[in-house]
Amino acid sequence: MQNSISITPLIEAAFLSAWQKYPVEHQAWTDLSWRLAGRVSVVPMSTSLQRAGNLDLVLRAMEDEFASSTSEPTMYAFHFQKMFSEAWLMSVYETIRALRQREDEVARAARSKDSDYTRYDISSTPSFVSIFRDLELLRMPIAKYEIAKDHQIKDPILFDMIAPSGDATGSYAYHPGDPARTHIVPSGLSARKSVTWLALDHAGPSEHSVERRDLADRLLRLKDEIEPAGIREARLAKEGDVSERRTLTTLDVSGTLPLRIEIKPLGSFHA
Image (cartoon, rainbow, N blue to C red; front, side, top):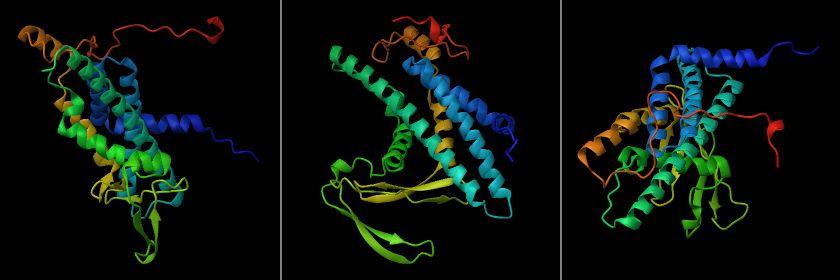
């Protein structure tokens, strides 16, 4: 007999329930999305960040439910939580990387005209640098099963193999030039049941834990360091400060799109 349960209403209910459960964080993601997108004038960036925010809210709900439960999450529950956590991390990384790239392009263009140009962008702040570094260290082993920037590694790295019991079961060498090289980032659950990864920085070499929820909270706090684009441009115009001014147009950050985009049916497009 076929299962008659409809999946779509359950998924929709999960996301809508998470919106209602975390209204403060929901609004914070919206504010962050417009502030970041407004700084580089990329409208779709706001949508990408808000979608990542929606997934963050669902993950917060899962984390809090697991933390308040008297029993450990089931195997499948942890599997899906980790799957969503990795998808969230990848989405956020690509958006943040795009922001940094756009700001780098603006800075290069400005320096070509003014050698004394000073950067006043988001991606240069210590908070952003720290967030991006953690995302970067985790993205490569999760997406490509290799250590981040392993082309910079000159000598093989020796790893101990540790069983869940904590006992060492052997070791293996990671050779950056080996096509069969593999680095699986260790992961688990934090005390508040959020997925946590062990990020490896080969430059140290050093390792440190990165909790998904803490990473999300750090991102949301970043919005408080960002001057909204419209307010910023108005201030610069009033102060007459040309060193910080951008050549890109800014977005209306009131919460509505500054332009209307029509999407035509596929049949209306002609070669």
